[in-house]
Image (tube, rainbow over all chains, first blue to last red; front, side, top):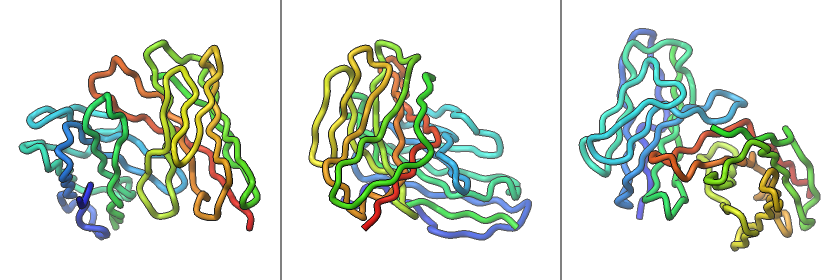
Length: 113
Length: 112
């Protein structure tokens, strides 16, 4: 199993540009999450999804959008990139509440200049 | 979301046990105690979790106080690979999203 796969690994964006961070999992997990991590800080929850077609805001959703059309994929869209969105982005998934364990991707390092 | 308090950093010698404390005085009856760790330049990885009883797995042990207001993650023999940031997280069992809300964690330094 590949687990949670994030693409790209690195990206430099100019202010005002848009991009989509891809996240895919092959574990048939219902729950998926997007986090951002600024240097030296803990992770902040951006958006999450409890199943296909269902998404909700986390702690820091402004400037981002998500969709969940399939169980496997949970893309994160940045519209009008700003320097404050420079961060490392992590996607995570988990199967169910009972199994508890969440699996994280390796991250996407985004720089907005 | 209930809060946790952890020391910013701790140090340990290689091959010695490490006890990482976590205070969660406002924990509710449905909160599970989770520990994750993040190795340098990697995503977090699951370590262990528990509700009321002490738990053991191949990575670590989790000791939960009787009143559940604190817990301790125990690494029995620290290795250099255990140098990481360790996060103690309360996960609400009633929350249908079962999301993880991270704090700032404890940075563990392991001396050879």
